[in-house]
Length: 177
Image 1 (cartoon, helix red, strand yellow):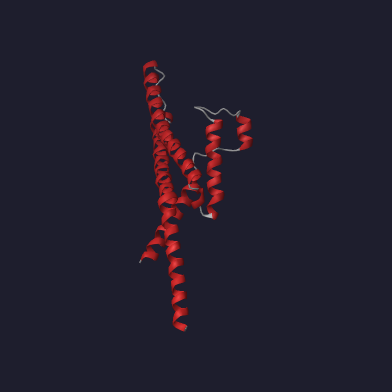
Image 2: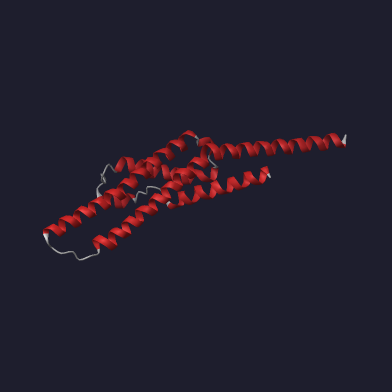
C-alpha cells in the first residue's frame, strides 16, 4: 500500500513538472522568445540612433561653419542625410513595435501576470504614437506636455523582456537537466 501511495505521489510530481516544462516552453516559443527578438533589435537600433545623434552633434551642429552659401548648402545636405538615416532606423523600431503589439494581442494568454502592467504601458505608448504622431506631432505642444511623453519603447520594457526571457530559458534548462 505504501509503495502504491509513493508511486502515486511521484507520478503527480512528474506530471506537474512536465506540465510546467511544457508551459514554459510554449511561453518561450510563442511569446517571450519573439518578444526578446524584437526588443533586442530595438535596443540595438536605439543605440545606433544615439551614435548618429552624437556624431551629428560632434561633426555638424557643434561646429562653427562658414556663412558661405555653398558651405551652408553642403552642411544642410549632410545634416539632412544624417537625420534621414536615423529616422529610417526609428521606422524599423516602429515596424518591430507593430510586431510586438500584434504578438501581445495574439498571445495574451501566455503573459505572466506580473508582466501585464508593463506590457499594457507599452501598448498605450504604441497607440499614442500611432494616434498623436504622423510624421510630426499632431498634439498641441502644451497638451502633449500636460498628457506626458510618448516612448517608442520604455527602457523598463526592454529590461523586463530580457530578464524574463533569460529567467525562463534558465528555468527550462534546469528542468531538462
